[in-house]
Image 1 (spheres, rainbow, N blue to C red):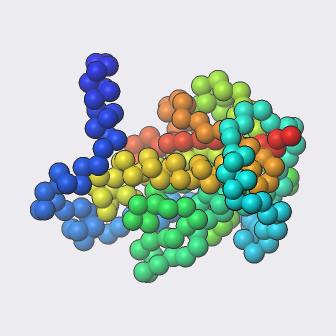
Image 2: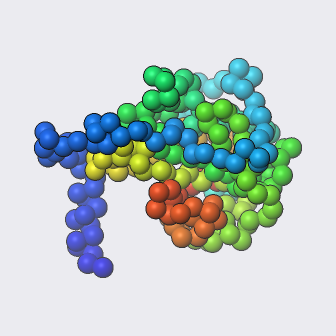
Amino acid sequence: MNLNETIKNGRFFLKSHHDEIEETFQSDQDKKIPQPTLEKEYDKNKEIIKLTPEEEFDFDEINLKDLIKNRKSHRTFMDKPLSLKELSFLLWSTQGTKEIIKNNYAALKTVPSAGARHPFETYLYIRNVENLEQGLYRYLSLEHKLLKIETGNFDEQMLEAALGQRMVIKSAVDFIWTVTPYRTEWRYSILSHKVIALDAGHICQNLYLSSELINAGTCAIGAYSQTKSDELLKLDGKEEFTIYMAPVGKIK
């Protein structure tokens, strides 16, 4: 690996390249190619768990200024469960669907996304949530429901995926976000990848703030094993792969 060339490529990635695209450039959307689905398909035979609806969130309100001021990364958590209502709130806050528009063209969610493409899926390794078995789950954001993937203790695999960061096996739940790039590429093609990275940041910041509201904390993890994380979630690593993760737990 040429370090200088790698740094150069990284800086190129961070820049906007809209003014460099020729007028003749066409995305798959411009070519009238059918758009990808708004959400990953799932096995309808798997157990589906109803989550607490938005209307029932009744947590104590905190001044927004104080909420932002108090936000920080937490790596130490109490051995205390989250309630299903609290988990529902965190999921809704980070990827909840407010409206589906234009005959399934796009979903408006609680976080911004370039072109309303929302290329992410939210997976969970649940360790300590009331009335839920330990195991792997996926948030069905369009329905505000939880898909049970596989129950069991995945501490060892999760620890390997997080490169030994032990907070992921001390938390109540680990959020693991994956990306399906083509949802954004369909509209923005080679301009997609910077905005996908920006969109991931929007999600995690909402997790920070919503965690503070329920006396919990989180810490964003960008240093993880791509291979181990994708293996844990049984992803192909090409059309869908892990992009970000964050443990959440109760704090003092």
